[in-house]
Length: 278
Image (cartoon, rainbow, N blue to C red; front, side, top):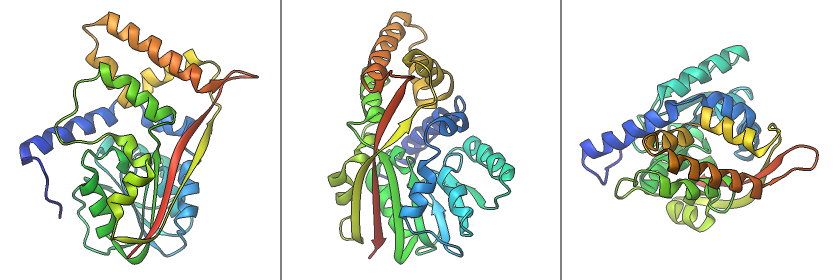
């Protein structure tokens, strides 16, 4: 089990806030409109196959977990937020897919050492506030020689830039926590896994986003459905002028990362990391 750098009360407060943020809005709708292709891509990259014991950490609504289960693997989808797992259960039921859903903290996983043949996380573990703790747990529960697969947004890509743009409008992060898009930096992830893995590979790629008509439509969608964006705007409820300023910044950001020829498209950059536990 993990040893937390903060006292227990402070850690509970951090996790309660994260749970509340990710329970806002409708992440299942966000995933369906954006990240859905990443789950199957991650499962293929991690080499998941029938019969494998697979853990999806910070699984959200099961984007990677469901794809892994469809290969015939024995899958556990874990997440801090029960609301996300409940949405994932409904999606899995609609696709006649069976897997286990487990409420769990990525920094203190309730599984024995070497419990899984493969451990994956699709834009999920990056949001754990203490990166070294999360990385240690990710490796701990994977068997020696087992596969690891992680997809994270890069600091330079759209999502990383969006978090940077929102930072001046957000409450200050708790002491000792780290920025999620750092998981999209090869050197950072390599340092987190150093000495624990072999066959480390990291590749940048992009995800095509083409479900939205205009930058404004996309921003309206984020404000209505995506928890991290909704939480920032909620914190600005008593300062409407700052909310308007954030609107302008995010709209400009969307325009900068999009093309308008024949409808709006965006390319979101991410880092795909694969490795084997040493």
